[in-house]
Length: 267
Image 1 (tube, rainbow, N blue to C red):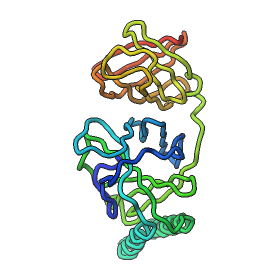
Image 2 (image 1 turned 45 degrees about the vertical axis):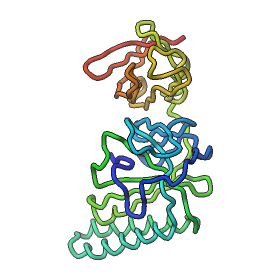
Image 3 (image 1 turned 120 degrees about the horizontal axis):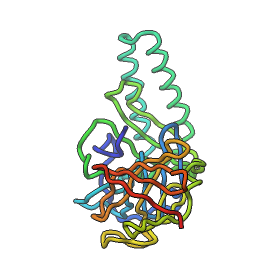
Image 4 (image 1 turned 120 degrees about the vertical axis):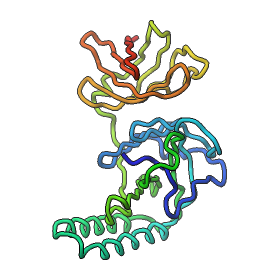
């Protein structure tokens, strides 16, 4: 999994010069291949990681945050594309025929997508996870052009043809399995609840001073017809991984770390 951003990318300075609220055009569920990006008015959810939107990146933080970073010019992205082409040519003599053909196809694919991009300067959106700062040599960021988000990724360690990956994202509906559990859920045991909509849960009752009614406290992705996984905030205010099963009696069975288990009942 490529973390967004564990380290700064070429051409991208991980500093927001000014406080900037999220442009509403980002809000929605977006898909590109195996990558799903969910943007709400409060959070950016990427690879199942809930990152709270901040108008300006703080120097120190906990958990995962999302924000605008430095502007990126098309010319800068094209420079990176040129670098990718150069590296593919340099490594071609050491590739077998199949690998060479695949690399050439990848380069041509990226080139065709870049040709559709406006000659403009774009605000980049990144996420920063406090637990992964400075780790890994792959990374990505997002830009928006004419209402279409693009994911811009770099992972040179995976091969020369992955120096730049550039893909448009399409607006998509939530999977039917997620829509099937839309509604209000409550835990009589833990005395908290939320309303699920397309996998995002907004608190309707709280049992902690660390989150309030109206906060988005859970995100689920579908793994099967009746199975889900994601993150949920605990009473300490931190998000933790969870797995969920829709039981035959209509309840949701949750399992967290350290074998913690509980159920939620539809209201």
